[in-house]
Length: 194
Image (cartoon, rainbow, N blue to C red; front, side):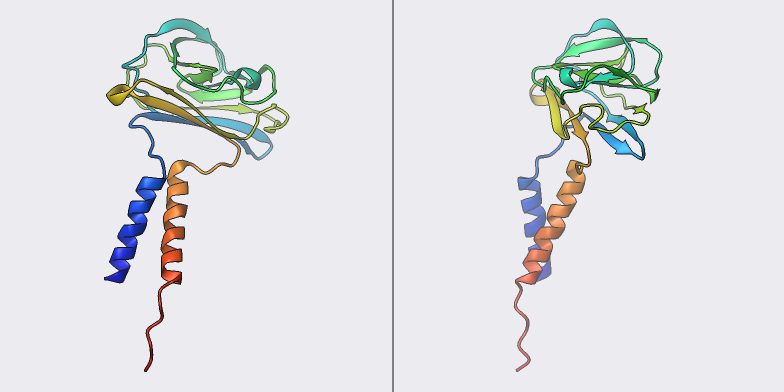
């Protein structure tokens, strides 16, 4: 009975203490992979509260403008959306084209983001961009967690960017739960032998 109570207690604390991801969200990671820097975008977007304008987009980054774009490398038509909040800088770096990219066009820039032309709200998207023989520091990126949010209620959504070796929320939740369970069992009294 004690194990079940402890397990439920730790699970409850984890749900309360760790913020949950939005229903639809894009996770963008930018990290060193071997000698290169790779940006990866995965997820989906709820565009209900937003209006698009059309623009052309290539795959590049400008950290001092909070700009990172992923996807196939030729310049393509995209839909551009303005968000309510978001960072205006990811570091001191300037303009640099990606050496390669794959998948759906996606990018953030200050308080706006781009997604491939005619994207349908809720559709899964996935893309990458690679900067060969670079590091986070040579690109002028500041490690950390950055987020863009918009809408409210059912139309609320977000984009979260992890620059560097930062655990994703699900990994952090798992580590917290394991830590809480271990702490709980460490303080249990040992049964008496008499």
